[in-house]
Image 1 (tube, rainbow over the protein chains, first blue to last red):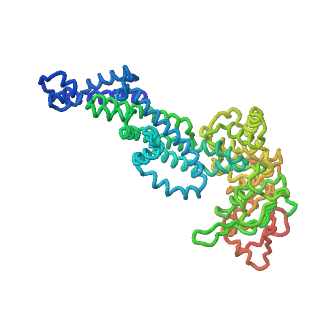
Image 2 (image 1 turned 180 degrees about the horizontal axis):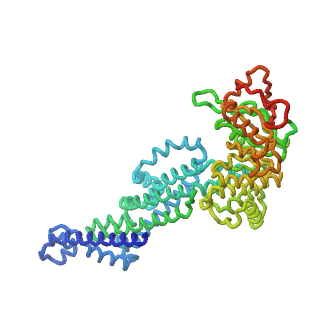
Image 3 (image 1 turned 90 degrees about the vertical axis):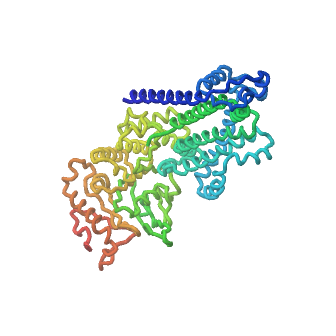
Length: 281
Length: 296
């Protein structure tokens, strides 16, 4: 039964996809492009659509498919600062996200432990966390650029600051809500504080901590696109903005799809890890 | 009292009340236990039984007074005192073996892993769970989980076992089997046990002495019932002993009425009661003096 429902869902997904692609194709091929002839030199310079004076037509699924194929068949070329393969751009973004996220893990988990274990620290830090949490991470960007004076490091900082809060809050919550019974078991066995932290509190709170990480990595991947649009240079966000300046909608749609796919993979990796540490009571 | 193995000396426990002031759970509690004795405490919820157990375990501290065990005052938890928790308290991410080995490795920190495991396996086999070592607690039934809890407590070879209603969450059949096993284990090893229960029959079957506590707040140890049943009693004929029903009735009388009205009972003229040595009573024994002049 489960297999058949999985199969039926797959068929339904494919049907929906087909309908969507067909509708898209029909919608964009309705208004045909102009048939004017222009000077090929001029057209090369400003783009065919601009040369004819018309708007860039919305690309259809076939155009996009062709562009995706073009990008995927050569993802890592470098032909200058503004012309690099989409694989390289994605790698830049991923590296920034992983670096910022990694630093955030290194800060949030120990700090979250401290907050979760001490009601005093929890109360003392709570107002700061409550104020910092709702700040859009991009609002930090000017301050980061001013103090760090490096656009790439600034975007890593922005990733760090946006990944920090969900992990910090989840770690503190997970640590604070470890069952009293388990702590009492450790106490009656005269387990020392360090051993208790690693053998009781960490495994007990691990599912909550990893859920925080999963939220964080999702947010980080959302924010990196916007951050790279702001600071420019490299990365998938910059690629999208650059293609917007080129009025290349097929490239933009390709990038959007790839951003979604990479985000899904990141999320799935953390979902897997969460499942590994989840225990059944 | 001073010669007792475990000596509870004038302990009190007060909590700050929500409306200010303090709630006294109990006050000036005195009680002694000998080595190898099996003592059950019976009383209604809220009388502070669990608090007494937690103080004995070192998980809680008395507001006043002290508990002396083997000549030394309790200062925090100790591996000499094993606790069997009502909710079994197993770590769900560890296997059965992992849970027991965790306790063994905590007691003998310099033991190599193989020795720890071997010792843990032995304890698991003692409670009849050989073969289930690699299971996670979530794969076990309630009775099996509690068995693992018992194996964990036994594995560290404690001087005293503290049990907080260990069988209350189990069905009657499993409870009976586990009672038999615990009684057998404790009798062969001469284990000193302090156990909290709500179950009168369980207390009569298991205990040498049954401590009757009045209702809280300000709970007291009203009296201590010395179990007149022979030591080699068995589950299937314990209720046929002539002393069984007198003991049972005495305890039920206490729980139903006297636990509430004990203060009034104390006020009756001629009643002698010393909180430092609560009276020992043996209902059903051929004793010339009646169990107590009933005040109700």
